[in-house]
Length: 305
Length: 296
Image 1 (cartoon, rainbow over the protein chains, first blue to last red):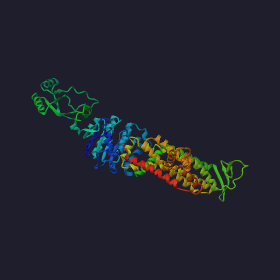
Image 2 (image 1 turned 45 degrees about the vertical axis):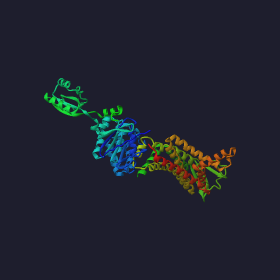
Image 3 (image 1 turned 135 degrees about the horizontal axis):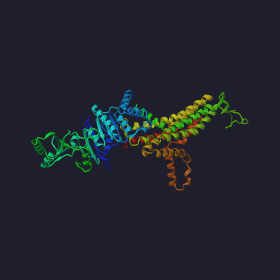
Image 4 (image 1 turned 120 degrees about the vertical axis):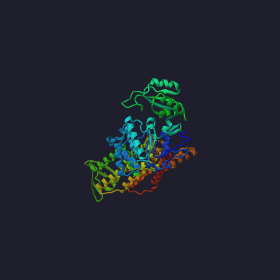
C-alpha cells in the first residue's frame, strides 16, 4: 500500500503551513518521513536544507506527535527536562526554559505531578511546551488541539502565533479547520496520499465569480426588488442575533449583505444601479468560503482532485 | 549528556517498576541477617565458635548443626571455608533469582519505547537510533548490575569484617554474572525489538535461560542421541544441540566458573564466558541493526 505518491511540497521558512486531509490521507506519514521516523521507498525529503533524518538538524526541530505518550514515571517538569537534555540544551538554559514554559502553558501548578495523572488537555499543554522547549526553527505539530477545550485551543493558537513572530516555521496537521484557517498562511490538502490542493488560505477560500455587496440604509424590500432585475443577486437572510455579546459577522448594524454571482462586468452594472438608486455601498468584497467548505468539496466531491 | 539522560531515564523507569527493588529488599535482608544473626570468633584463620541467632553452631566433616551441644565443635573449620560455603549457598540461590528478576524487570523496556506516541518523540530528538537503543540497554544493565554488585559487595564486606577473610573471587563472580546478564539482556532486547511484546520477550528469554542451562548436558555427553536409530535424525539432533550451545549464553558453564572463582579453584577455560559475551553482543548488534532501519 502506498501511503504517499507523487507528492511535491515546499514549505517556506517563517510561514505557518497547514496540512489537511481525511484520516489515512498520509499526513502523519509525511511528518514521519521528514523526521526520519519512517523511511521513503522512493523520493527525497529534506528539512531546513538537510536530508530527512539528519541527527544534527533535529536539534532545530520541535515535534508534537499525535497521541503522544510521556514516560509514566516522570513528572511534568522532569519530562520537559528529559526531552530538553535529549535536544542537547545546556542545563542552566534548560532550567530557565522549563520554568517559563510551565508558566506559559499554565501547568506550573502541576509541575511535580506524574504525567500519568494528567488529563488529555494537560498532556497537550505539556506537549506544546515540549515541542517549543529548545526554541526550534521548525515546529511540527500533529493535532495539537486534540482533546483541548476552547480556552485551551485559543491559548495554543496564541502560542503558535508567538512562535511565528519569533521567526519559526510551523507545520501544522489538524482536523480543526477553523484553527488552521485562523493561523495558517498556506495550506495543502492531501487525499489518498496525493496532493490535491495547495495555496494561500485566502486564495483557496476565494470564490472567483461571486462577490458580497454590503449596503447601508436601504430596506430589504427595496433590495429584493432590485434583485429581481439582476440574475445572480441574492439578498442574504437577516443575520442571527449576536452570541455572547460578540457580533457573529462583521456586518454593520442596519446593513444588508447581498451575494452577487457573476463576472466583474455584471458587478459593475450592479454597483451603477445601486448608486443610481442612491443606495449607500458600505463594502464590496470577493465572496469567500470557509476552509471547511473547501475541504469538504475537495475531499468528498473530488473538486480540484 | 544526551546518552547520560537516556541511560538514567531507563534506570529510573526500572526503579519505578519496583521489581528490582524487591530483589534489592531481599539482598538487604541477607545483609542484615549476616550482620545481626551471624557471630563468629576467629583465631589464626580458624573459626573457634559460631553463633546464629545466639545458638551455638558446631561443624566438622562437612556437617553443621545449631544448638546441639553433643555435636563436635568447630574444629578444623577455617574462616575461608565458612565464608566460601556461605557465598556458594548465596550464589546458588540469589544469582539465578537476581538474573530472572532482572529479566522480568527489563522485559518491558524496549517494547514500551517502541509504542506509538513514545518512539515518535524519541526519534524526533537529535540522538542517533543506535545510541538511543544502546543507552536503553545500558540503563537496564546498570540497574541489574548495581543489584548484583550490591549483593556480592555487601556479603563480601560483611563476611570479610566478621572473619578477616576477604574473598575477591566472590566479587569477581558477581561481576561475571553481571556480564552474563548483559548477554541475556542482548537476547531480551533483540526479541523485544522484533516482537514488540513484553510477554513474548519475557517468555522467550526465560526459555533461553532454561534451554541454555540444560543444553550443556547433551553437549557434554556426545553419545546421547544413540537412542535415535536414524543417522540423519541423530546428525540433526546433534547439530541442533551444538548450534544452541554455541549460539546461546552458556549458563551452566558460567555458573561453574562462578563457583570455581568463589572456591578459588582453577578455571579450566574462560571460553564459556567469552562465548556468552560474544552471543550477547551479537544479539545486541542484530537488535541495533534492525532498529536502525525499522519504520515507525
